[in-house]
Picture 1 (tube, rainbow, N blue to C red):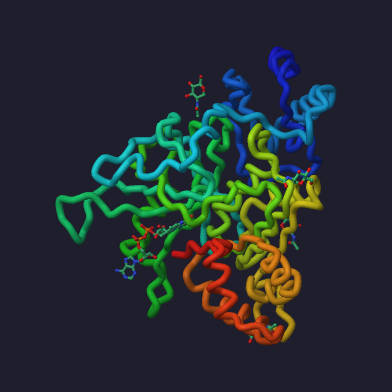
Picture 2: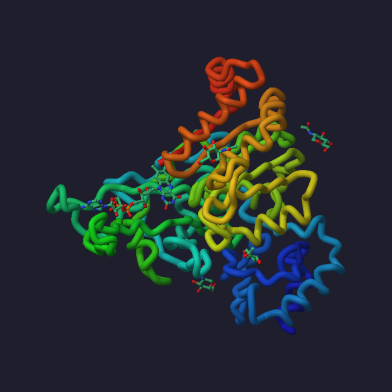
Length: 380
Ligand SMILES: Cc1cc2nc3c(=O)[nH]c(=O)nc-3n(C[C@H](O)[C@H](O)[C@H](O)COP(=O)(O)OP(=O)(O)OC[C@H]3O[C@@H](n4cnc5c(N)ncnc54)[C@H](O)[C@@H]3O)c2cc1C
Ligand SMILES: *[C@@H]1O[C@H](CO)[C@@H](O)[C@H](O)[C@H]1NC(C)=O
Ligand SMILES: *[C@@H]1O[C@H](CO)[C@@H](O)[C@H](O)[C@H]1NC(C)=O
Ligand SMILES: *[C@@H]1O[C@H](CO)[C@@H](O)[C@H](O)[C@H]1NC(C)=O
Ligand SMILES: *[C@@H]1O[C@H](CO)[C@@H](O)[C@H](O)[C@H]1NC(C)=O
């Protein structure tokens, strides 16, 4: 009860999540240390919201409901992270990376997902701040086989948390990393000698391990915050969802004094099957709490069929809603694309097809969207 006494004095609430009846399966917010308004709260019990603390979470939500917290958002600190006019850029460079510490590594896909994707929380001690939509570089340990005696090249990873991190204290960064595994095309067998160096290093790492990071980098995926009521159409395949998880936590999970989102965020997520969905619990929660501000459409290529019986890809979902999407773009919506490079040709073909059907010239429309800075692409 000591914890509850402390908690009941807080002006914030975890009830948005704690109060949910659905267990947070494969939850990505295993909160370790939470800091409320500068006071750090390190629970004696690990605050693992997804399972064994059902009793505690119920009691938490009772305490919290007394608080009448607005929409049960989580307080964040330090709010000075909002002060700067420009995003931080390349604070740490490849020649002098920052040595950070792994907090946790968690597999976040179900057993029937092809491949493995991990949610990795890294403690940077508040020394490598970033904004939503930016990336970190990671230098895996060991020698670069192409340049003996030298470190590996930097690999970039989109940041999947807000600037406050999953512990809401501005000290951590989360990445969403898919293990790159090599299968011999002849035998179909895995060849570990050719597996991806950095993704395997990250997914194999353990709490307390050190990791060399660089960055933050990237400006193309920054959330345009001059209009808090803007429309954001977010298209992702697989780990491409990472920056959107950050945006959506900022919009719907965190109580950020200077950012009150009143627009529409529409996420299209393409993965192989239901077990491959990433952060689905978080997104489902936003749908429940903010139905007027959030839309979420999934394309499960191996589980769903498109209109002509082919595999369901994100572009098929885009086509399904193309009238609305085009209208939103005409009204100034931002559209983002993130994920594997291979997603773009199919999407561009679909957008062109839709434009043709509408009697519009896609090339002209596209250059206008780019000129207006409505078009944001980060594919790899
Ligand atoms: C802006 C940006 C953002 C990104 N964001 C993310 C993200 O959020 N999440 C994410 O998972 N990735 C992201 N990436 C990709 C990431 O940077 C890495 O490219 C990816 O993790 C693979 O790196 P690796 O070191 O594991 O593989 P590498 O060791 O670099 O190998 C690359 C590929 O080659 C294969 N390979 C290795 N040796 C051989 C061989 N001899 N013959 C044939 N094939 C071989 C590997 O299996 C692997 O598939 C991003 C990239 C960019 C540019
Ligand atoms: C949590 O806080 C405790 C005590 O302040 C500290 O020892 C520990 O390193 C912190 N863990 C993380 C992940 O920040
Ligand atoms: C955003 O919309 C809300 C109503 O949803 C309105 O009160 C507010 O003034 C709008 N803000 C801006 C900057 O347009
Ligand atoms: C898909 O996965 C979710 C959890 O992410 C689960 O609740 C649901 O029952 C699954 N649906 C199907 C059709 O398998
Ligand atoms: C559906 O899938 C087929 C086969 O991949 C593809 O040719 C077609 O363009 C897709 N979309 C629609 C709407 O049929």
